[in-house]
Length: 116
Image 1 (cartoon, one colour):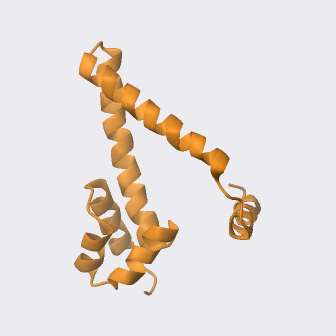
Image 2: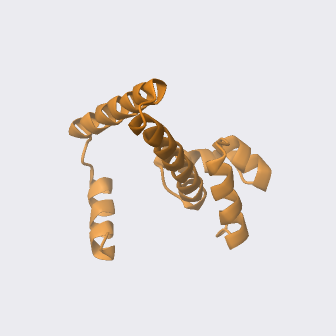
Image 3: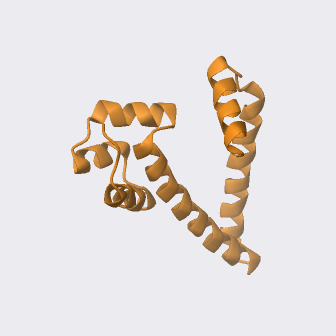
């Protein structure tokens, strides 16, 4: 898969914001489904990174809306925020089981070199 154009990146971000799957993205652009699936498995690559940027930004906006409602005493919103927090806490606990492999060491060194 060649480098994406800015228009493709913008379109993939939009599809991610709208919650379309990796398969939908691949089919829409005529990309190899297996290659796009691999990017999602590895959680890296241009298609995945653009998609995730859109997906996460939409999730952030939705959660902000729920949080605002919760802070205004909406019982359903409070319960939903508690669910979000519980899911996040569980995921963060999984970090203790994360295996630090040579690949992650290389990725972390790359991030450190870039100042991230």
